[in-house]
Length: 316
Image (cartoon, rainbow, N blue to C red; front, side, top):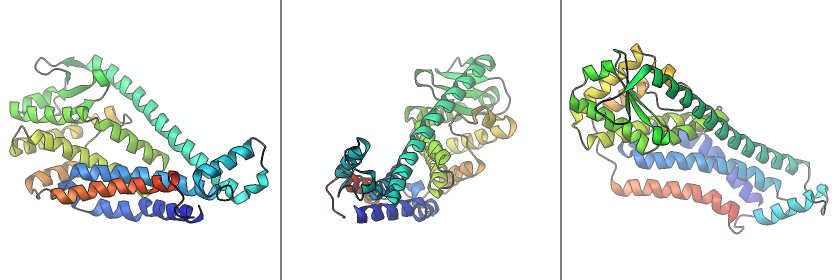
């Protein structure tokens, strides 16, 4: 497993820095948002698996020639049937690091979920006091404010879209329809789960370029995906106008404070600018062949460390 551990370490480094930096600077993800989303998820998962796998393989190096035999040797040590000296101090440290990193990632994921769930519950309680149900749209609440604001609050069967009186007065029926389609897409496609996962990843490893760049990219890509769904029903000028009007809301009403910490999407000026630029100066979609290649590459990227860890020993 010596070369396996070093190969996984090399892959972990590549997925932690040059690959996400290169992808974040590329222009094609806006032309193939779904494929780009799959690739970012693959980079995050493969990177985490490679980091843990590299330390695990190196730690088990003296106990077996593959993961299963190494874990069997570790079990014998824990049961007292084999001397701890067989492991060695450096390898014991590598195993401890792999275990600590695994626990840290899982605990951060759970802690992020707990905090987000608690803050969403508190947010929903505030909305019950500050809003009223829409008479025109189901699962929609209206808050009394002249600032144009629209966002969604996930919660399973209790998911709602929140609009302001000011936005309803500004938008035409078609523009309002575009906004509702956009927000409902976030809910139906469960974009909040992606935001939660990548927020937890960044919280667990804030020093890692992958975590920051991936969170920013995913936040932008889910907005593009929601825009594309809305474009199937409404015209492009209608959607552009709706985006511009909604974007002025957080400057007047602190919707970002209401959503802060909930793990939900808050449009930044950069995201809004990118969305409008993509609609006003559209680029042709990435050819289907290239999109298929990107998705295939994402699958291979995740399959390589998985096969090295759990498959037969190829690199010894």
